[in-house]
Amino acid sequence: MSVDGTPVSPFALNDDQLAQLDAMRAAMLDASPRNVGRLDQWGLADDFDIYAEVAEYRETPIVMSDGTSIDAALSIPRNLAPGQTCPAIVMPAPLIGIGHKAYLGMFRRWVVGGYAVLAYSQRGLADSKGEIQVAGPQDVADGVEIINWLTAQDGIDADRIGCFGASYGAGTSLLLAAKDARVKAVAGASAWGDLFTSLYENGTRHLAAFEALVALFGEDRCSKEFRAVIDKIRTNVIDDEVRDFARVRSPKQYLKAYNDSQTPILMSTTWHETIFSVPAVVDLFNGLTSPKSLLVQIGDHGNAELPGLLGLISKPTEMTYRWMDYYLGGSAGDGATPQHGVRSEYMHNLLSDLRHDSWQDYVLPKQRFNLAGPAAGQQDAQMAQGQPQAGWTRSVQANGQGTEAVVAPKLVQTGLAERMGMPNVYKTAGISRDLAAIWTTAPLTQPMRVQGELALRVTVTPQKNNATIVAYLMDCDPATGKAAIITNAPYTLTNQQPGQATTVTFALQPATTSCARAASSS
Image (cartoon, rainbow, N blue to C red; front, side, top):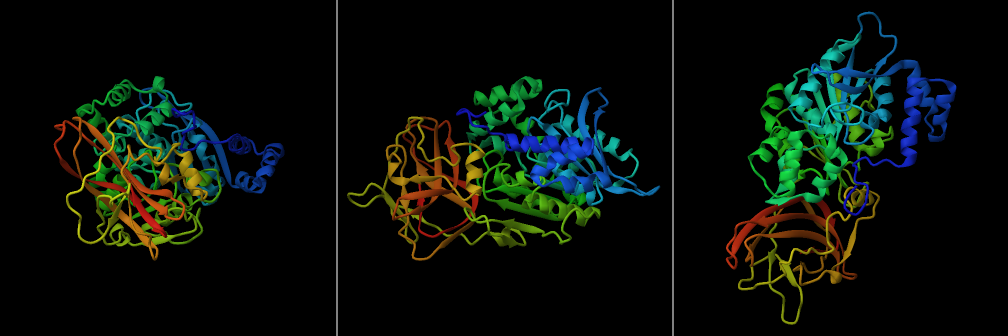
């Protein structure tokens, strides 16, 4: 739970979704008419009749070399001919209380498509024993042992192993692929590239997201190493121990391994991702020389792939089926060739579908807008192209308070509403000018596309030795004064001499949208 009591699990399931997964599991364990019939209310009975004919499913603990029992489930196609083998998908669990059972909705597609599939919960998660390592070296070593166990089963082709994971499982999948050359293809939904940047960006702790993750892990189940890092982040002690903890858990650190092995990697993220750093995912994508694909959608962490995990349609999971079919030789997807490069959606337009060969092709040429001082008698100022205005200053209170304008008032839930066409909207007139300075373009005569990388350069004169500023770019309707956030980023100045001006330049989160009215910055 977050500080305001809102569920923050990336895959927070309602009672109906949990009941659906429970009914799927019962039918997979025992395909009796009664169990399969329970799925009629979701229109799934026929699907699981077919599944029962072509596959077997069993839940089995896999014991690691140190005696730790890992909770896992395995499904293999029935009636393989003697000596016949099939490709296999390994799925480490997302960060959710039910662990690997979050993937039950995907099993049918995989196995009907000719794959064996093994899903498991990492140490300390769900019914797995041991302590939570946060995708650390022990989790990677466990993954190697699990692949050893899997490839020892009859019918598994050890040369056609793929990994898919969502969120926590995405990170584990990427890190496992860097360690084990048997992993021939990877897909990660709501992936991360650099864990340190996700925790600490531009000198600023991402405390809300961090505490949400800690709450989901459950501190009492975390390793001693992780608990020490939790205490340091809470007290703002960002030292070498914290950096090293994040470094070994960051796929970006293993670029050479991916590029040497030419492992095909598919990743997805979202424009208003609040848990993991989007720029770090982009950096990882750009650094890959192997076959690669990046999907960026509307919303927040875990929103886009959730329907697919439940067995419905989502872009991340449909792209994953195609990806694995292409590189491993199954038939879980629709038969289409996967797209390599960048695929994205416009913010607030779920039906949009943009495709580019590379991130460089996706990013539009930069345009500079200069900030200025307010005109006489005006509270706010303009930002415009052309010659910069010199000699102006603006003041805001440095009292530790923020404004009501935040990118996600409710982690994950705000993004989910955005995916449903209901972005959070702010009345710019209601934003306190004591706490924020606002600049706005002139009303746009035609839509202006914002697409790619954005940055802010500003000279700040803090009155204390430490100060944090947060920048927002908004799409504002000048007729109503209502605005939706396009992108944002924080920046913290530390150990500054009070009253001394400092010029800082920092990147905002990547974005893509079409501003139809005016652009506003605060």
